[in-house]
Image 1 (tube, rainbow, N blue to C red):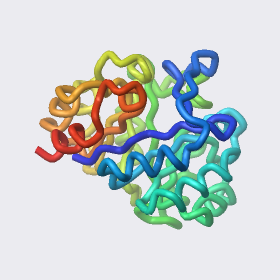
Image 2: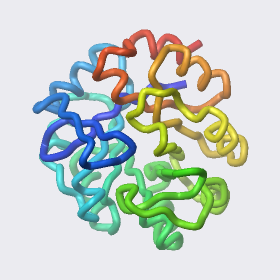
Image 3: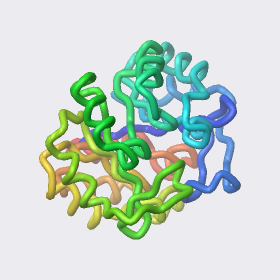
Image 4: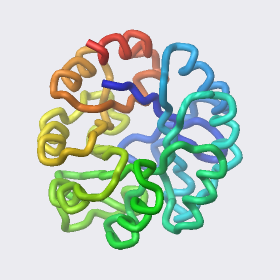
Length: 238
């Protein structure tokens, strides 16, 4: 299992939110590129970037920070947040991003998302954010009437690189991941699934790794020193 350190961007800074609440923000570093270098020095092979301003605005916002991170890191980066048009994908791929994460637009317009997957095969990740098992969109501001499982299965035939499954109730709460829901979703599709939300301890990593998941995103626990990245990577590997 691969560990993806998360770098959430707002106003050009590295921040974390609690349960996607923009009013519950903690700023961890004013230099996201330095954060990226630090995670790579500790063993990260991929980075997970989120443009929080973009998620709200519906278009890429923190492109300067993203470009700086990509150049500083020297490892592949995946980016989500506000990517709603084909031109947005072209814009961030031009920055050097390896993969894009599509969420809200995939629910609103599945045909468009499938077309993007076929234009950029194995470079699109489907981001499924769920609250109580139901898909949430628009930077988690709205909850749909579609289950996460149904959305994953509907998109399973697309040439996706992976699915990132986030349980919003766990995100930023340092209370452990939703192993059961994530493993259930992973068992229902052949696409690699990456867990997100609540990964806090080495035991959390071990529990996820035992289910055979492709990866796990870790955010607040790394920034608050509750989880050592090198130890998490070692646990994920076996």
